Every structure is written in structure tokens, then in C-alpha cells.
Image (cartoon, rainbow, N blue to C red; front, side, top):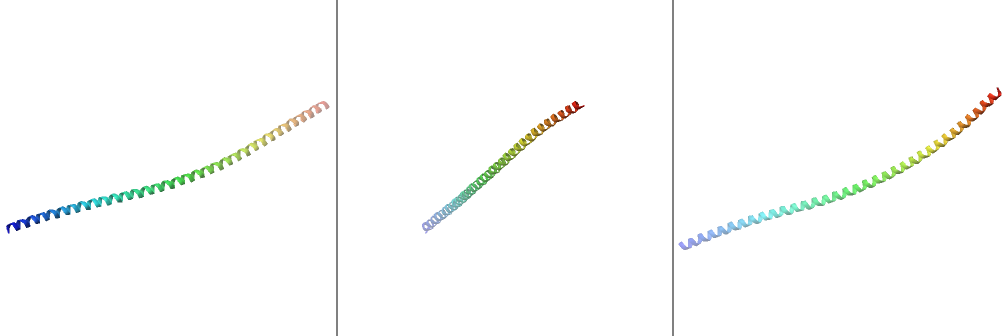
Length: 125
């Protein structure tokens, strides 16, 4: 009986150790599973963030391209308006010079006629 009790004690001790080892192994496995799940979730969050960042960059690039095209179109319009204004100013300047030349010629002719009248009046006296 003593041998039977000793065997039972050894068996219980062995079963207790086995149960503790199984519980420790299960706890380690749960810890690894939790860590793997957290790593997978973090990787998914990073992937989604990278996808969103890529989308934001694409949208920003399209917006920048559209702004550039709009600015280039406005610059072209302004250049056209500036060229028209310059041409109009050149035409007005040419017309003013022509007018000035005509007025100068008319003044010279009038002064010549006035001088002729003066000389005639002096001769008549």
C-alpha cells in the first residue's frame, strides 16, 4: 500500500507538473497569438494609412496640376490683354504724333502767312 501511495503521489505530482506545463504553454501561445494579432492589426493600419496617403498625394497632385493649368491660362489671357493694350497705346501714340506734326505744320504755315501779311502791311504803309 505504501508503494501504491507513493505511486499515486508521483502520479499526482507528474500530473500537476504536466498541467502546469500545459497551462504555461497555453498562456505562452495566447501571448503569441495576441502579439501576432496586434502585429497584424498594426500592419493593416499602416497599409490603410499608406493607401490613404497615396490617395491624398494623387489628389493633391491633380489639384496642383489643375491650378497650374488655370494659372497658365490666366497668364496667357493677361499677356494677350497686355499685347492689345500695348498695340492700342502704340496706335494712340502714332495718332498723337501725326496730329502733333499736322498742328506744327499748320502753325508754321499760319506763322508764314502772318509774316507775309505783316510784310505786306509794312510795305503798304
